[in-house]
Every structure is written in structure tokens, then in C-alpha cells.
Length: 420
Ligand code: DSN
Image (cartoon, rainbow, N blue to C red):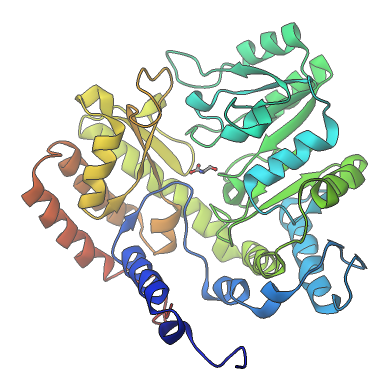
């Protein structure tokens, strides 16, 4: 048997059907999960390329395997483009994910028992910022900052007083569910005032930072981590940027410290996405993401929903469905039955557990990739309102689902029909 002798539809029909099902689901669902997006066909092509066959432990020009001349080109392109896109001193493009990138930073410069000051997960932070259920929370002494109870925004004076009191070695800023612009300069001042290192996790807002829609943490941070698959619209994965003085430590912590063979097909796809990120089209796209999120949050406010912090400055917003007597899981499941995919999410000071929650998180990167503008997402906001006001009306949910499929015919994801 040659490796090309059988294609997926005949060699593994069961799996082929699952992929076909997912292609249809993506085409026929309004995806509002804030961390999801649709990559270009070029990114898909690189991700599905023969680079998946290659071992390349080490770094370009310094590998532990022979035969790396072509994957070296791919990784060097990703590195050079990431530096051009973000304006950073050094970048490591090998982390398999955002969590791996964050772990890479923590394990490169901290010792067990060191103190980290970071944003509470239930206030918008991330699991890998020291949550006790994650490895990041197992070895370090974690102090969390919350958002203000009234404004639901970061209270920088509280962060400053916690920093002075606890003298952390590392401050982490950045979030997975925070709808407001983060003042990275302020975090820089706080870190400097207490002698801490600063790490900014821009997993969610990476694309907005590239386009200048959000201020950049690169100048004032020792480390910046990002995922490549959210607003960056590339393959699933992570990257670490850092000041030159940490370059060697970061590289040796990623390999051999915390990862083995890098995923060269994914690194190649990161290079493709980073080339796309250098275009004007990408910058306009990021501006449109924010305009769409703002338009939806405003429309849902007009419909009587309480939006956490009163609105959004970025690509996402949260509805406090508890305010309407709903739970996040019931609301998100009803939306899914209507063809709208978002996720339940805790809101600041939520009294419900993470599997239930009082919130639903919405984001506009994916619908904006499909070409939706403000007038289109206003219709989507109206559909969301209809669903949330009558979650048990299965007839209405079915009608909404048909309407969603009609609307999406005008916004195909790919120009060519995809095959699993
Ligand atoms: N799970 C991602 C999100 O949805 O925000 C963060 O890692």
C-alpha cells in the first residue's frame, strides 16, 4: 500500500462523515464563540500538509534531526513575520496552545512558591493564570485581582495595592472574558513600582493589537503570549514574545523543557496567517470585528438585556442572563437549538457554578470573517433576543434555525466546497 492509495471517504467513512457533519455545522451555524474563527484556505492547506510528517526538535539551523532544511524555512518565516507583525524582540512560535505558551513563561523565570498576581478566572481571567485546577496554580503562590463590583472593570488602584502588599515576582494581565480595553501602560507602571516582571496574555485580542484597535502590551511587557487561532485567524496554537534578555530561557523552556517535537505543519500555517496579518485587509477586518460587537451589544441593551460592564470595547460581550431569570447553560443550549452557537460563561461575582453560570459570552470574529457588517449583526442580535425571551418555545427555535440557515447562504465561509 502506498501512503496515497486510499482517501478518507473510503478508508475511514465513519470519520469522513463526522468531518462532513462538522463542515455542514460550521456553514449552517452562526458562530459567536468569542475564541473561534474560520481560517483561510491557504492556512487549511498548510495545516493539512506533509510537514506533519517531520520531526524537528530544536530550532531553525540547530535541530536534533536531519532533513530539516524545508521545515527550517517554514519556522524562520513564522518567526520573522511574527516579529514584523508585533514589533517584538524575540518570539518562540512552537507552543502547541495558549496554555503551553503561558506555562512556558511561568516555568522559564519562576521558582516553585513564587508569587503571581493575576486576574481571577471568574472575573474574566484564564485557567492558566494560576487557577488551582490548572498546573499553573499548583506550584506557585497565586494572588488574584477581581473587577470592581459596580463598574465590572479592572480597578487599577486595587491591582496596585495588591502588588505593593504581596510583592509578586510576576504580574499577569490579559483575559479570556473581559470586554473592556486593558490599560497595558498602567500594568507596566504597577509592575515597575513593585519590581515584578509583567506578562500580557493577548490570546483573545492579538488581532486587535496587530491592527491598532487595542493598545499593544509589547513595549512595556517582559513577556507577551498569544494564540494564533482566535482574532489572529490562524491555526490552533500559541506563541511567546519576549524581551531579548529572556530569549534563551524561553526557548529552552519550550524545548526541551516543556515540549518535544514542534508541530511543523501548524508552524507553517502560523507563518501563512502571520503573512495575512500584515495586510490592510486584516486591519480592516479587526476594525469591523469591534464595530460588529459594539452594534450587537447596543442592540441587545435596547432590547432590555444587561450587558456586563454596560458594553464592549473589543470583540466580545457578555449578557447577564441571570438578570432575565435564566441560567447561562439553558440560554446557550436554546441558542444552539436555534442555530446560534455561543457559550455559557461566568460573569463577575457570579453565584452560580461554572457548569451553570449566569452569563453567555458572545464574540464577533467568526461572523465578521464571513463578511457580516453592522446591519447583518443587528438582525442576529434580534434573533438572540427572540430566543432568550422564550427559551422553551421549540416551534420558535425551529423557525429561527431556518431563518439562520437562510441568512448564512449569503455568507459562505469558503469559496470552494470543502471535502473532509
Ligand atoms: N478556551 C478559550 C476561550 O474560549 O476563551 C480560552 O483558552
